Image 1 (cartoon, one colour):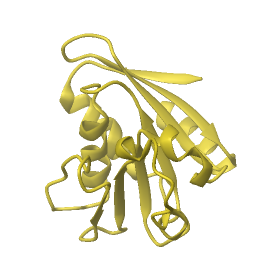
Image 2 (cartoon, rainbow, N blue to C red; image 1 turned 30 degrees about the horizontal axis):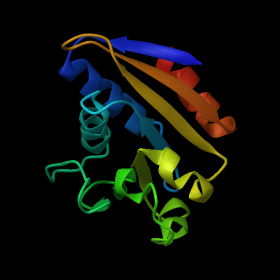
Image 3 (cartoon, one colour; image 1 turned 120 degrees about the horizontal axis):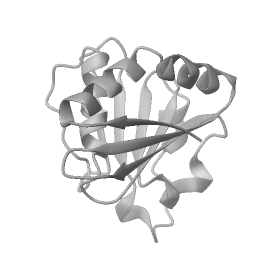
Length: 150
């Protein structure tokens, strides 16, 4: 697993912006990490990298938030509340659609996730320091991570 360390919220946002430039419609990125690890901060960077002007916030209570004012739609999902849910919320439509899907707490909807995706674990290292562990699945994501880390 490859990793990058950031030492401030600004660096985490910049990392998200860099990754955004390597993503394309239909891509799925999962984010795991403890509460407060920086998953939403990183996603804000992705949104900025896609040219999204809306203020991004955690979708904890809505499960899915859509941002359509950038070059590519961004679907920000929080599956935390779906741990024991049985219903399908139409994830396939998002995952194979015209936008980029960012899924926090993805382990709760593992059965719906595509095989080709980028899994990222965000680890809290200190007040402002985070380690981003990248696990790409599929050639496109392997190339994206290689470029991101170069």
